[in-house]
Image (cartoon, rainbow, N blue to C red):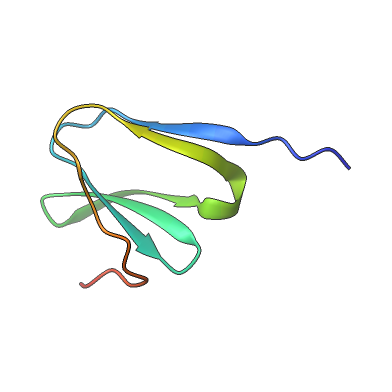
Length: 60
């Protein structure tokens, strides 16, 4: 089986990236915009002033 890896581009201004289990969560002003499974990604590229956390949980 051939595994296709993708790059995840974040262009939302002032977004915050967090790791929740095996998912990357994109948040903006305490609202969850998107949840992407981490095992499908080869890389993450952000544009602008995004913040990021490497913690394993998203605090709600």
